[in-house]
Image 1 (tube, rainbow, N blue to C red):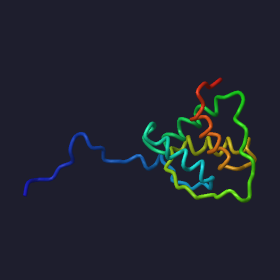
Image 2 (tube, helix red, strand yellow):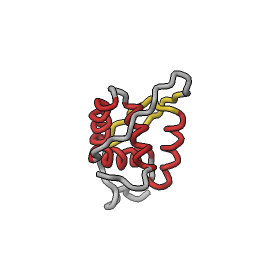
Image 3 (cartoon, rainbow, N blue to C red):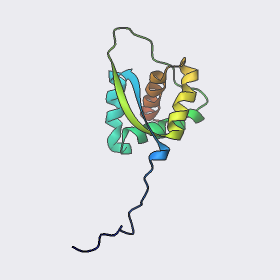
Length: 117
């Protein structure tokens, strides 16, 4: 066998120090909308990253979804950058400490045609 050496283009370390894997409780419709955005942005985490960056810069935040006891909810596991994770937590203060409402607002931002910053 020949000598196995690390190839030049492959990094030794990963980006695991900069990544947070977390779960959010969101409505089924919101989960479907995020999955629908994956082909455009590449992943659920990237779609949420773009949406939270736009959301944090908006003057008028989208309205929160009405609380409905009968609407089905689902737990979604998402791989996020630390900055995106922290922005979601920071924005949740404006949505009554509900990160699910922030994710729903992110979906609304992704669906907007014109965004006023």
